[in-house]
Image (cartoon, rainbow, N blue to C red):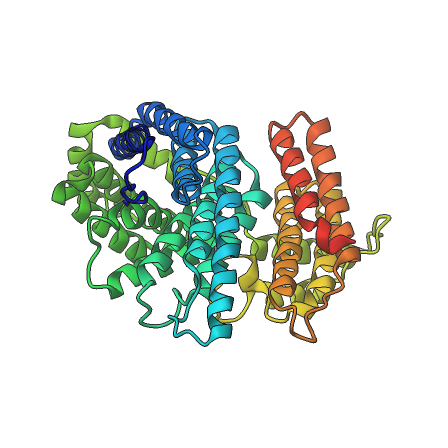
Length: 472
């Protein structure tokens, strides 16, 4: 993308043009290195591009293109740093990119408003920087997920989805449907890694459906459809024993591999393992033999994937709490210090947050009635305490972090709907309950020496910061 325009004649023109050309060359080389999966080389080129922009800034030329170029460069650096395992550096770069894009967004909105007041004819829709900010947040969500920080990752994912929803990308026949498919493909992988595997499956299915509606999975979509969405759907359908669904997606992955866009060994290993687990050994043998010709490691990798134990989804965690409470009541066992929810209350909560036919891709999708969120969050906090008391820590984690995410989603909804007379949502007490429950869980994990505790401590600190404006 060409950002800088050619300068007019001046005594500094040659030095300016030289710096601009150095920026362009280094930036393009960095992008090429990323495409070739050489993130370290990409970072070296991006550092050269950054140095060129610093020289332009130091010259005090007041070039309006520099902030946009710098934001784009920081965005690219965010992915490269994630790819080399530097999640801290990735988040720092993306924070800066978000700040620059939000500044551009404010300027563009002000210009748009001035034009409307003058009666200028303008295209409807969001200002361009809104979508750039959404993309930054999606990339930062990936970095947070790599860092093992669920609230931060899923909050950014929710904001990214929301940005594109407001831009109309999720509307039927939208010309931004490809963006919606891309966002959901990455969202599927993020949900699977640090969130709710049932939401991961919804994201993955919807992403693939949108790509198929567009007629084909083109080269630009392969990294998302085949790199993110399809493996998530395949894994989760196989985990549920839905073999026809899993194998149908496996076939799509194999087709892409056979077209030369990915290795076929992994695709054959995936199909072979799934066929074998489905009891279709004769069909599996050929695929496993073809996979072994490429690498035995691929078969072992697929076996580990199939044998992995998924953390409970919110629905499963609430079912677990409901059954445990039913058993306690049936046995006449007294409750602990905190008054627990009874099984019917937990079931009502589960159905309100996880039931129905509506698509749910993130916490915002769980909010059918935003004014019900404070009560739901308070109930989730109580369920979290029940689960901790019975040493069901993975279920407690899902419940308590979902409570934080619901608070975050409700806060954003209220901010975006300030003109709505019903937009005032009393969240403070509910947030304090959710934060206290999450802090209690982190303390338990820390005392047990759980390696997750450090990342969750930092994640909880970020949750406090993001929820702060609505808590006071």
